Each structure stands twice: as structure tokens, then as C-alpha cells.
Image (tube, rainbow, N blue to C red; front, side, top):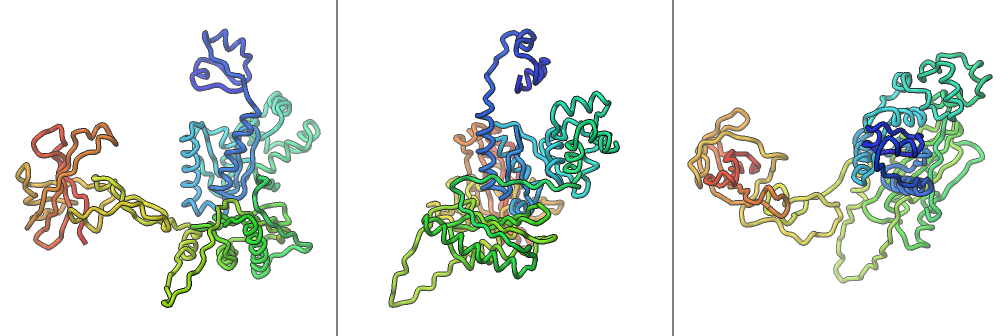
Length: 462
């Protein structure tokens, strides 16, 4: 058995068990031939998708994993935890069972992700030893023969193995045990060889003498950008995501990612975006190679300038948006969405997205500030159609001086079947201090099936 589902596991089936034995244990057991080649191709497709979406340093961690170096790119996703959580949720949405871990080294992340039961684990910097000490020796990426031999000798955990003198282990099992331990604990570098496709546009510059000064790095980044844009021009493409990979002489990698709101081939703009993060580069003992790849490209539209008697001042704000976006700030604009329910008639779109063809509602005034979630209020009001006479919000009682309404909003039964009879009655009210609020009652005030008759505050007028 190469793989089993949860029901088979609960029934006692285990990976590696002969199929005949499993069928004898469970009557009517459904068996499917394993497809290692198909699985490997699927993992490669996922790795290429992660390369475009998450980080420039992605590789396949055979036979069933993917390893990424997210340093220099995770801030674009809000940090390590939001990035990893979003990745796991995205894969689960595709019907995959997945676990992810962030740790200091490839070896420790590999072991923790496979040994832990949680889907998302973040190991703080410098706490790798504490996180792996109780993991089984089988998590060290050793061959089954070596793992079996260590088990016969009584080794059960990584901590027990790491506390044992190296010489006897090397004499019996060779250098592989010590190498894997050093890689897990970060004593030996284990670079990730990034996955690449044949059609990926990539330019590189190797140095006979290692470089390290920020000015020198910036100079060669500029030269690589010129080469990359020339290659893009021959294909009629523009870059949406450019990745700079730094190869250090100590056999370790660093990476920087720059994204743009639209396809560009603007050499000064791309150079500025990449050079703005030079302070994040740690050259160590020197950099022996720089590589710049366009991991996301799109067709580039050339726009011909039209002469006019009157000079038109058209300001392109996308460079400013790119600068903010590459600092980790999520940029968007609000756009109207076709819906009568207030919290659904607004959506987030790209700052440069075309108009959606919808207009903001104008039949009734809307408050300038909408609460993220309506808040419960206590109200004194005559039903069914009178505005509140007073309301208590966040512990403060307010007497209502005037009110306007109701504006009736019906549920969208085609979105949620539970809203078949749902109703809200909205009122614009003003208290004695001149503060104006947007409140609603759940239901029409007569039929209990339309709502609970509870009151909520949904917005505040500026």
C-alpha cells in the first residue's frame, strides 16, 4: 500500500502493508493503482505555481513535498504566518491534504511538517534544536536501511542521535547520519536549487571575484535589468514579477522579489524597485553570482502618443503603487457590486482595474463610515415603522432627536436560502448632540419569520 485514506487507517490498514492482507481485513476495499509519475508531475505543477505566487526559490522535496525559501518575499503576504496559512488553505481548496512548517533549515522544516499533526507550524528563529529534539530518527531523510539499523541500536529520537559521538556512527553507517544532523541543525548549508522552466526568461552574471558593496550590487542589478527588458522586448512581453537570486560563496542563497501592478519594461522603474531592497541583502563573505528572472510575464501593450494642440497631463500612478506594494502594503480600491445588502455592495479590486459597470446606490444616503460588523444596540421604538426614540450603544444611552426611514432591504435568497424571508428596516437617526447614525431592525416588526426584531448599528455619518 503506497497511500491510504483516513477510513482505511481507522480500520487498521497501514502504508507498506501488502494489498492482499488489506483486502482480507476489509471486505470490499477499493484499490487504485499507484501512479508515481503522475504524482511527481502534479507536485511539479504545484511547485511552478508557488514559484509564481509566493517566492523565487522553490524546489521539489521528493517524493511528496515542496521546499521554499521565503525570506525576502513573505512580507508581501503579510508575514510568515499569513503566508503559510494562505498557502495551506489554497491547497486544501484544491482538495489536497497538506501540512506546512516554517523553520530555520530545510531539514528541520521537512521533519516538522511530516511529524507534526497541525497543518501550520512556525518555529521561531533560533529554536530549531528545541523543535526537533523529540522527532523520530526517520525524519532525518536517511535511507530505510540506516533508519532500521539505528532503530536496532535503540535510537528513537533525533535528540538521542545528536547526543551520541559521531565516530562510531560514521564507522557503522558512513557520513550520511552526521551530514543530515548538521543540515537539520544548521551547521551545514543546504542550498535550494530553484525549479525553472524552459520558457522562463532569466539572465545571470557570475563574478570572478566576489562582490559585496551595495553600490556594486546596484550597478550589476541595473545591467541585469537591461538584459531582461531586452529579452522581454523580443517576445513582446512585460514583467509582472521579477526575482533576484543572490548566490553567496558560502553556498547559500538569498532572494528579492519585485512585483508590478501591470506589465512593464521600464528599465529605471524596475531597477529602482529591486535596488530599494538592497539593504536586505547580506553578502556574507561575498556574492559570486546574481540571477534575475521574470517569473510572471504578460503581453505588453505599446501605446502610441497622440499629438494634440492642447497638452494633456495624464499622470501614471502605477510606479507609486508598485513602490507601496513591494513594501508589503496591500493596495486596492473599493468598487460597487450589484447587491442590495449593504455589506455586499462593495468589493475590493485592483487599483488599476477597469470600472465594473456598477454605480453606487443613490436612492438613500449611505454613511461615510461603515462598521466592519454591525453592532448590537438597545432601542426604544414603536413598531413597525417608527424610528428609535432612544438607543444605547457601547454603554452610552442616546436620545434620538430626529429620524428618517425605513429603507427596507430584502434578503438575497439566490445567495443564501436562509434569506428567503429575511428583511431589514434601516433608519438614519440623529441624537441630541448632532451625531448621525445608520441603524436597522432585523425583521419587519410584525412577522417573526422575517427576523429577530433586534436592533443593530451599521454605520456612522461623517
